[in-house]
Length: 326
Image (cartoon, rainbow, N blue to C red; front, side):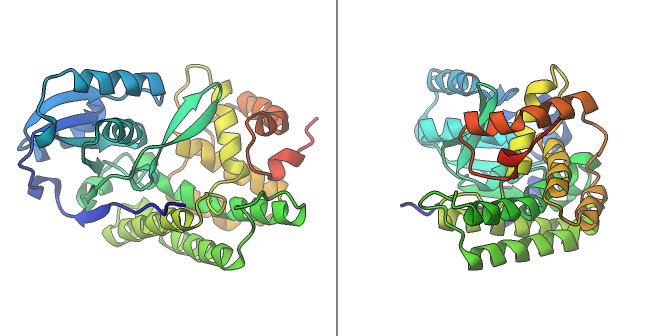
Protein backbone atom coordinates (compact mmCIF):
# COMPACT_ATOMS: atom_id res chain seq x y z
CA UNK A 1 0.00 0.00 0.00
CA UNK A 2 1.24 3.48 -0.86
CA UNK A 3 0.05 6.52 1.08
CA UNK A 4 0.16 9.51 -1.23
CA UNK A 5 1.12 13.01 -0.15
CA UNK A 6 -0.25 16.50 -0.64
CA UNK A 7 1.78 19.05 -2.59
CA UNK A 8 3.81 21.70 -0.82
CA UNK A 9 1.51 24.72 -0.62
CA UNK A 10 2.82 28.28 -0.89
CA UNK A 11 0.41 31.16 -0.26
CA UNK A 12 2.03 33.95 -2.26
CA UNK A 13 0.99 36.35 -5.01
CA UNK A 14 1.63 34.94 -8.48
CA UNK A 15 3.85 37.89 -9.38
CA UNK A 16 6.20 37.00 -6.49
CA UNK A 17 6.71 33.45 -7.74
CA UNK A 18 10.36 32.72 -8.48
CA UNK A 19 11.10 30.22 -11.24
CA UNK A 20 14.45 29.94 -13.00
CA UNK A 21 13.60 26.88 -15.09
CA UNK A 22 11.95 27.04 -18.52
CA UNK A 23 8.25 26.29 -18.25
CA UNK A 24 5.94 23.96 -20.16
CA UNK A 25 2.53 25.53 -19.59
CA UNK A 26 -0.82 23.71 -19.53
CA UNK A 27 -3.76 26.10 -19.41
CA UNK A 28 -6.74 27.46 -21.35
CA UNK A 29 -6.98 30.81 -23.07
CA UNK A 30 -9.59 32.13 -20.61
CA UNK A 31 -7.68 31.13 -17.50
CA UNK A 32 -4.35 32.32 -18.83
CA UNK A 33 -5.74 35.71 -19.83
CA UNK A 34 -6.99 36.18 -16.25
CA UNK A 35 -3.49 35.95 -14.73
CA UNK A 36 -0.91 36.35 -17.51
CA UNK A 37 0.13 39.84 -16.39
CA UNK A 38 1.16 38.37 -13.01
CA UNK A 39 3.14 35.58 -14.67
CA UNK A 40 4.84 37.40 -17.54
CA UNK A 41 8.21 36.78 -15.86
CA UNK A 42 7.99 33.03 -16.56
CA UNK A 43 10.13 31.66 -19.38
CA UNK A 44 7.42 29.73 -21.24
CA UNK A 45 8.97 27.52 -23.92
CA UNK A 46 6.01 25.22 -24.64
CA UNK A 47 2.29 25.66 -24.19
CA UNK A 48 -0.77 23.45 -24.51
CA UNK A 49 -4.45 24.23 -24.11
CA UNK A 50 -6.27 21.47 -22.21
CA UNK A 51 -9.80 21.33 -23.53
CA UNK A 52 -11.32 17.96 -22.66
CA UNK A 53 -10.70 15.36 -19.93
CA UNK A 54 -9.82 12.63 -22.43
CA UNK A 55 -6.78 10.36 -22.11
CA UNK A 56 -6.01 10.39 -25.83
CA UNK A 57 -5.78 14.19 -25.80
CA UNK A 58 -3.44 14.05 -22.79
CA UNK A 59 -1.32 11.39 -24.52
CA UNK A 60 -1.07 13.55 -27.64
CA UNK A 61 0.06 16.53 -25.57
CA UNK A 62 2.63 14.36 -23.81
CA UNK A 63 4.02 13.15 -27.11
CA UNK A 64 4.16 16.69 -28.46
CA UNK A 65 6.16 17.83 -25.44
CA UNK A 66 8.51 14.86 -25.67
CA UNK A 67 9.13 15.59 -29.36
CA UNK A 68 9.74 19.31 -28.83
CA UNK A 69 13.52 18.87 -28.37
CA UNK A 70 13.52 20.75 -25.08
CA UNK A 71 16.00 19.94 -22.33
CA UNK A 72 13.93 17.87 -19.93
CA UNK A 73 16.52 18.19 -17.19
CA UNK A 74 15.78 21.91 -16.92
CA UNK A 75 12.04 21.89 -17.67
CA UNK A 76 9.16 22.42 -15.24
CA UNK A 77 5.48 21.85 -15.97
CA UNK A 78 3.00 24.48 -14.83
CA UNK A 79 -0.78 24.11 -14.77
CA UNK A 80 -2.72 27.37 -14.65
CA UNK A 81 -6.50 27.16 -14.31
CA UNK A 82 -8.99 24.58 -13.11
CA UNK A 83 -9.47 20.85 -12.87
CA UNK A 84 -9.26 20.01 -16.59
CA UNK A 85 -5.90 21.75 -16.93
CA UNK A 86 -4.63 20.23 -13.68
CA UNK A 87 -5.66 16.68 -14.59
CA UNK A 88 -4.00 17.00 -18.00
CA UNK A 89 -0.82 18.41 -16.44
CA UNK A 90 -0.67 15.62 -13.85
CA UNK A 91 -0.89 13.06 -16.64
CA UNK A 92 1.87 14.77 -18.65
CA UNK A 93 4.09 15.17 -15.59
CA UNK A 94 3.62 11.53 -14.63
CA UNK A 95 4.57 10.26 -18.09
CA UNK A 96 7.54 12.59 -18.53
CA UNK A 97 8.92 12.47 -14.99
CA UNK A 98 8.91 16.26 -14.76
CA UNK A 99 8.03 18.30 -11.68
CA UNK A 100 4.60 19.94 -11.63
CA UNK A 101 3.51 23.23 -10.13
CA UNK A 102 -0.21 24.12 -10.07
CA UNK A 103 -1.62 27.64 -9.93
CA UNK A 104 -5.41 27.41 -9.54
CA UNK A 105 -7.46 30.39 -10.68
CA UNK A 106 -10.42 29.27 -8.54
CA UNK A 107 -11.07 26.77 -5.73
CA UNK A 108 -13.39 24.91 -8.07
CA UNK A 109 -12.39 21.32 -7.15
CA UNK A 110 -9.87 19.29 -5.16
CA UNK A 111 -7.99 18.01 -8.24
CA UNK A 112 -4.91 20.15 -7.58
CA UNK A 113 -4.38 18.17 -4.36
CA UNK A 114 -4.96 14.60 -5.54
CA UNK A 115 -2.73 11.97 -7.13
CA UNK A 116 -5.26 10.99 -9.81
CA UNK A 117 -6.43 12.46 -13.10
CA UNK A 118 -10.14 12.08 -13.82
CA UNK A 119 -10.75 11.08 -17.43
CA UNK A 120 -14.05 10.57 -19.22
CA UNK A 121 -14.33 7.19 -20.91
CA UNK A 122 -17.29 5.17 -22.17
CA UNK A 123 -19.84 7.38 -20.44
CA UNK A 124 -18.19 7.37 -17.03
CA UNK A 125 -15.20 8.71 -15.11
CA UNK A 126 -11.96 6.83 -14.63
CA UNK A 127 -9.55 8.00 -11.94
CA UNK A 128 -6.09 7.31 -13.37
CA UNK A 129 -3.17 7.12 -10.96
CA UNK A 130 -0.79 9.89 -12.01
CA UNK A 131 0.77 11.95 -9.23
CA UNK A 132 0.10 14.97 -7.01
CA UNK A 133 1.78 18.25 -7.95
CA UNK A 134 5.09 18.87 -6.25
CA UNK A 135 4.04 22.45 -5.53
CA UNK A 136 0.79 24.38 -5.27
CA UNK A 137 0.78 28.18 -5.48
CA UNK A 138 -2.24 29.89 -3.93
CA UNK A 139 -2.82 33.57 -4.70
CA UNK A 140 -5.82 34.45 -2.57
CA UNK A 141 -6.35 37.71 -4.47
CA UNK A 142 -6.68 35.76 -7.73
CA UNK A 143 -9.15 33.34 -6.15
CA UNK A 144 -11.20 36.21 -4.73
CA UNK A 145 -11.98 37.66 -8.17
CA UNK A 146 -12.69 34.35 -9.92
CA UNK A 147 -16.16 33.96 -11.48
CA UNK A 148 -18.44 33.61 -8.47
CA UNK A 149 -19.96 30.28 -9.54
CA UNK A 150 -16.44 28.78 -9.70
CA UNK A 151 -14.65 30.76 -6.96
CA UNK A 152 -15.52 28.31 -4.18
CA UNK A 153 -17.19 25.53 -6.17
CA UNK A 154 -14.81 23.06 -4.53
CA UNK A 155 -17.23 23.14 -1.62
CA UNK A 156 -19.22 20.56 -3.59
CA UNK A 157 -16.37 18.06 -3.05
CA UNK A 158 -16.88 18.61 0.69
CA UNK A 159 -20.65 18.97 1.07
CA UNK A 160 -20.72 15.60 -0.73
CA UNK A 161 -19.46 14.11 2.55
CA UNK A 162 -23.05 14.33 3.82
CA UNK A 163 -24.35 11.91 1.20
CA UNK A 164 -21.15 9.88 0.82
CA UNK A 165 -21.00 8.99 4.52
CA UNK A 166 -24.67 7.97 4.45
CA UNK A 167 -23.92 5.68 1.50
CA UNK A 168 -20.86 4.20 3.21
CA UNK A 169 -22.94 3.41 6.30
CA UNK A 170 -25.72 1.93 4.16
CA UNK A 171 -23.20 -0.34 2.45
CA UNK A 172 -21.92 -1.46 5.87
CA UNK A 173 -25.44 -2.28 7.04
CA UNK A 174 -26.11 -4.29 3.88
CA UNK A 175 -22.75 -6.07 4.00
CA UNK A 176 -21.78 -4.51 0.69
CA UNK A 177 -18.45 -2.91 1.56
CA UNK A 178 -15.65 -4.95 -0.04
CA UNK A 179 -12.42 -5.80 1.73
CA UNK A 180 -10.39 -2.64 2.15
CA UNK A 181 -13.45 -0.37 2.18
CA UNK A 182 -14.93 -1.40 5.52
CA UNK A 183 -16.61 1.40 7.46
CA UNK A 184 -14.13 2.97 9.89
CA UNK A 185 -16.01 4.98 12.55
CA UNK A 186 -13.19 7.39 13.41
CA UNK A 187 -12.64 8.13 9.72
CA UNK A 188 -16.36 8.87 9.36
CA UNK A 189 -16.11 11.18 12.38
CA UNK A 190 -13.10 12.94 10.87
CA UNK A 191 -14.93 13.40 7.59
CA UNK A 192 -17.94 14.84 9.43
CA UNK A 193 -15.64 17.36 11.14
CA UNK A 194 -14.26 18.40 7.74
CA UNK A 195 -17.81 18.82 6.45
CA UNK A 196 -18.62 21.00 9.46
CA UNK A 197 -15.60 23.17 8.67
CA UNK A 198 -16.69 23.55 5.06
CA UNK A 199 -20.24 24.51 6.02
CA UNK A 200 -18.83 27.03 8.48
CA UNK A 201 -16.72 28.85 5.87
CA UNK A 202 -19.19 28.70 2.96
CA UNK A 203 -20.41 32.27 3.25
CA UNK A 204 -16.93 33.80 3.57
CA UNK A 205 -15.40 31.64 0.83
CA UNK A 206 -18.27 32.33 -1.53
CA UNK A 207 -17.81 36.06 -0.96
CA UNK A 208 -14.09 35.86 -1.76
CA UNK A 209 -12.96 36.59 1.80
CA UNK A 210 -9.31 35.61 2.30
CA UNK A 211 -9.85 33.72 5.56
CA UNK A 212 -12.86 31.92 4.15
CA UNK A 213 -10.94 30.80 1.06
CA UNK A 214 -8.05 29.63 3.23
CA UNK A 215 -10.41 27.56 5.40
CA UNK A 216 -11.99 26.05 2.30
CA UNK A 217 -8.50 25.15 1.05
CA UNK A 218 -7.72 23.60 4.44
CA UNK A 219 -10.88 21.49 4.33
CA UNK A 220 -10.14 20.33 0.78
CA UNK A 221 -6.59 19.36 1.78
CA UNK A 222 -7.75 17.50 4.89
CA UNK A 223 -10.42 15.65 2.92
CA UNK A 224 -7.96 14.54 0.25
CA UNK A 225 -5.33 13.41 2.76
CA UNK A 226 -7.94 11.53 4.79
CA UNK A 227 -8.78 9.55 1.67
CA UNK A 228 -5.08 9.07 0.92
CA UNK A 229 -4.60 7.50 4.36
CA UNK A 230 -7.29 4.86 3.81
CA UNK A 231 -6.61 4.37 0.08
CA UNK A 232 -10.15 5.04 -1.14
CA UNK A 233 -12.60 7.95 -1.46
CA UNK A 234 -15.76 6.64 0.21
CA UNK A 235 -15.86 9.44 2.80
CA UNK A 236 -16.03 12.08 0.04
CA UNK A 237 -17.57 10.36 -2.95
CA UNK A 238 -20.87 8.52 -3.14
CA UNK A 239 -24.16 8.52 -5.00
CA UNK A 240 -24.04 12.30 -5.57
CA UNK A 241 -20.87 11.90 -7.67
CA UNK A 242 -22.21 8.81 -9.46
CA UNK A 243 -25.29 10.83 -10.42
CA UNK A 244 -23.08 13.67 -11.71
CA UNK A 245 -21.07 11.24 -13.85
CA UNK A 246 -24.26 9.72 -15.27
CA UNK A 247 -25.81 13.13 -15.88
CA UNK A 248 -22.96 14.19 -18.17
CA UNK A 249 -24.25 11.67 -20.70
CA UNK A 250 -27.57 13.51 -21.07
CA UNK A 251 -26.32 17.06 -21.52
CA UNK A 252 -25.41 16.87 -25.19
CA UNK A 253 -23.13 19.78 -26.10
CA UNK A 254 -24.18 21.80 -23.03
CA UNK A 255 -21.08 22.38 -20.89
CA UNK A 256 -21.81 22.59 -17.17
CA UNK A 257 -19.01 22.62 -14.57
CA UNK A 258 -18.66 19.27 -12.83
CA UNK A 259 -19.07 20.88 -9.40
CA UNK A 260 -22.50 22.19 -10.39
CA UNK A 261 -23.58 18.67 -11.38
CA UNK A 262 -22.31 17.32 -8.06
CA UNK A 263 -24.20 20.07 -6.22
CA UNK A 264 -27.41 18.98 -7.90
CA UNK A 265 -26.60 15.37 -7.04
CA UNK A 266 -26.01 16.17 -3.37
CA UNK A 267 -29.45 17.67 -2.88
CA UNK A 268 -31.25 14.96 -4.87
CA UNK A 269 -29.50 12.03 -3.19
CA UNK A 270 -29.88 13.58 0.27
CA UNK A 271 -33.64 13.68 -0.31
CA UNK A 272 -33.67 10.02 -1.32
CA UNK A 273 -31.70 9.32 1.86
CA UNK A 274 -34.35 11.21 3.90
CA UNK A 275 -31.72 13.63 5.13
CA UNK A 276 -32.28 17.17 6.33
CA UNK A 277 -30.96 19.33 3.48
CA UNK A 278 -31.52 22.98 4.38
CA UNK A 279 -27.98 23.50 5.70
CA UNK A 280 -26.49 21.79 2.64
CA UNK A 281 -28.55 23.85 0.23
CA UNK A 282 -27.62 27.03 2.11
CA UNK A 283 -23.88 26.29 1.80
CA UNK A 284 -24.19 25.68 -1.94
CA UNK A 285 -26.14 28.89 -2.43
CA UNK A 286 -23.61 30.89 -0.42
CA UNK A 287 -20.91 29.58 -2.76
CA UNK A 288 -23.06 30.52 -5.77
CA UNK A 289 -23.59 26.97 -6.99
CA UNK A 290 -26.62 27.32 -9.30
CA UNK A 291 -29.62 25.12 -8.67
CA UNK A 292 -31.25 25.63 -12.06
CA UNK A 293 -28.46 25.12 -14.60
CA UNK A 294 -29.21 21.45 -15.27
CA UNK A 295 -32.12 20.70 -17.64
CA UNK A 296 -34.94 18.89 -15.85
CA UNK A 297 -35.32 16.30 -18.61
CA UNK A 298 -31.63 15.37 -18.27
CA UNK A 299 -32.02 15.01 -14.51
CA UNK A 300 -34.99 12.69 -14.99
CA UNK A 301 -33.19 10.52 -17.52
CA UNK A 302 -30.10 10.27 -15.32
CA UNK A 303 -32.15 9.30 -12.27
CA UNK A 304 -34.13 6.63 -14.08
CA UNK A 305 -30.99 5.05 -15.46
CA UNK A 306 -28.87 5.45 -12.34
CA UNK A 307 -29.29 1.96 -10.77
CA UNK A 308 -28.25 0.28 -14.01
CA UNK A 309 -25.44 2.84 -14.52
CA UNK A 310 -23.78 2.29 -11.13
CA UNK A 311 -23.89 -1.48 -11.56
CA UNK A 312 -22.50 -1.31 -15.09
CA UNK A 313 -19.55 0.78 -13.93
CA UNK A 314 -19.08 -1.15 -10.65
CA UNK A 315 -19.37 1.85 -8.34
CA UNK A 316 -19.34 1.10 -4.58
CA UNK A 317 -22.74 0.35 -3.08
CA UNK A 318 -24.94 3.37 -2.38
CA UNK A 319 -28.53 4.63 -2.35
CA UNK A 320 -28.16 4.87 -6.14
CA UNK A 321 -28.25 1.07 -6.30
CA UNK A 322 -31.63 1.03 -4.55
CA UNK A 323 -33.48 3.77 -6.45
CA UNK A 324 -36.83 2.78 -7.90
CA UNK A 325 -37.96 5.46 -10.34
CA UNK A 326 -41.26 5.51 -12.21
